[in-house]
Amino acid sequence: MDTTRAPMMAMTMVGGDHFFLARWVEYYGRQLGRENCYVLSHGGDPEHKKIAAGCNVIYLPFDESRKNFNQRRWQMLSRLTTGFTNFYNWVLVGDVDEIVCVDPAVSDSLPGYVASLTKKGGPQVITPFAIEMVHNPKLEPDPITDGRKILDVRRIFRLNANYAKPCISATKIDIVPGGHFANHPRLHLDPHLYLFHLRFIDHDMTEKRLATRRAQREIQSGALEEVEREKTGWDTAWDTYKALSKMKPKAETVDFPEFRKEMIDGWKPKKVVYWAPGGARPPGVYRLPERFKALF
Image (cartoon, rainbow, N blue to C red; front, side, top):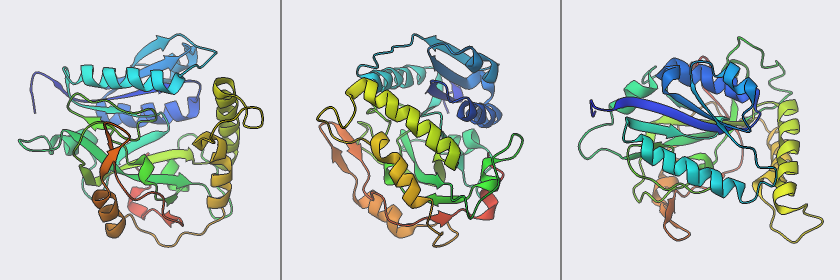
């Protein structure tokens, strides 16, 4: 560890999404200290400052046109990530509905575990294994309430290599829109780190949030029935969720050696200068082991 730099920070950009921001701040504030949490508030929502009290909250002007919004957002986040590595050994960047955790069987400290990887010849960019949570209302009927851990009431998930993101960096990096892959040519798919993607964490919340995202997409690119454009993940996400939410878990595990190997073996250039793992999205859902339920 470079003692001239602080150990680790986390950064996200958020518009609205008060529920997710509260959970993000609670978790990363507890792990890293709120003084090492950076929240970029799109539109300067005053509620963000209340939720993230003690964090570094930066107000960004709101752009109603949303022209090239995701590209501009991730260009900024990439450059900030690179810049912050001058003052932090490790910079974690991601969406507000993403939480990175260490397997509690290995460590209860995210910065402590990541620090253990800081050594000569060690990784410069870390990719956690992806866990995409899926709410099945019949199997998990309890609501997510204040004061109760999300993973205490939601444990069903699917595998999705697209969310194994290169989100923890100690070096200069260029990250594509969405954060799904980057220009760093070496993959360190960590065996004990997990990125929990929470967009499908609750049926009613998912329905409302995806409707908002589809409306934003239409402002940016036009409605599917009115313009010629390819469908995006936001256009199809509700149908994807509805199908997944009816499935029963195949097993209770986070051990997927064959899928991890597929991701590593499939590591290849993506587009021009970016790299991505293999693996895609295998069918079915699974259930988290009991030991994860108190994480967040």
